[in-house]
Length: 568
Image (tube, rainbow, N blue to C red; front, side, top):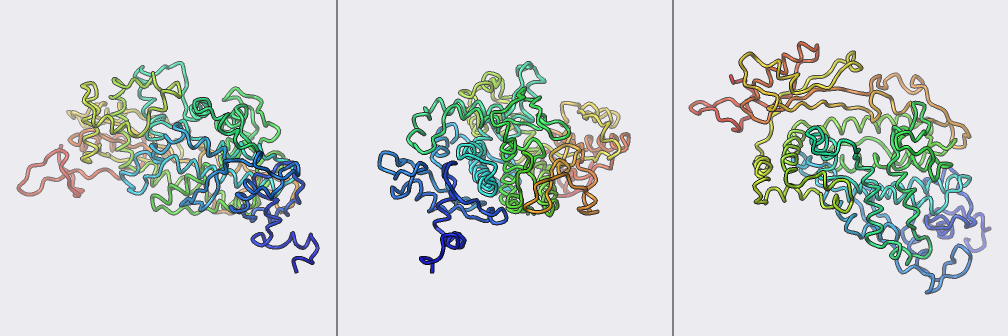
């Protein structure tokens, strides 16, 4: 039947049977190939078959983009690698991605846990930035190819699609030890102490850009990727990749229009295709593949359900007026995405015990700065790449006298003699706009008269949990279309979606920890008094204060599950 059927009928065979069609819709096809556009409603479901992709890259029987047969001279000697991922299954890395991965700078990500110190609370949360980067690459490739084949009129070239995927792969190259702990806790503390250059800004996104450039030059990748003669990445292409990595929410005005004010970059290399900058790091509304992957991966590792369907979002998205838009039916899916993010922050990323451990490691790294002098390491990629999660082990087994204070804290961590949690209070919604950050002094001054509690005994954590855009609704920055073939899109009125959608998109809490368990009762009393004065909720969730067992004296740091209150 296949042999006598018209070619158009043959092209409509199911993708797993229609090898001819699959050969014409693989990601390495040149943009000038004369292929038939897949109907929008079906394109998202077309599988990128691994065998077909591999065959096109290797088989001398397949034609190149100019119609000439491949020969030993123009067949790539590198054909990428296959990855079997726990989250996304089997997918292929192209030769350019493989060249980047097979460098010491990228392999450093294997020594950076994705969730920092959360594995002390969630034992299986030991996955790294390495896996997350591969997963983000996979989803970036999936999404950009969806647009390429579903909307032929966009004229997305093979090189442009490749740059989006590489941006997904390299977006986390600049993370420091214990991921966000380093840039959110350690560096601000050192800056307050005058040990970090106050006139220079540091961010892991900017370091990712610098590390990518350093990686390319240090490993002479111009020569390595030139072996792949079909679509080799070039050094000049890195500027586009760096733009995609570093674009920020502050580069957009309140209406979602790009200004480039934050990065002082009013024009982008691919500015005529702004939607390509929304796939990996979406500054417009924060719907991007980075978020898709880390929520799925982190939830899987921690055993926390992640109830959103990223495949629906990808399959039911299209570009309208240079923006990524979604079908109206997916408003609920987007709210589920951001609710999932908030839930992960509440249950995992800001877990009270995990934060206590983070503050211990922060104290250890701040103390270790006398030896390591982080200000001399963080500004250049060639020195920054020496910092990773092995830093804690290096401190633990060191013998230098100037690291003794840090070693004491690490020993406490190994014995699980942790900082104690005095509780948290919730800031009333009516006070969100006028609320100021709470300091240790603000809490300590409410300690009982005669208490020995001092500001240096206390750590205050000003916690904010939101839908990724502070108090704003990120879905309000998304535009929706009615039908798959709709030529227009617009914001969606929440009242048309549901009356059960959230009204508020940010929660503020104040947490208090103490470094010495003996000071815990006084800290609890101080936090209670603070909450009453500030009209906040009563504190909840404190570490149980140890009660002496009959016949035994109370020892600071001894373990007990009793919640009884003992006098300090």
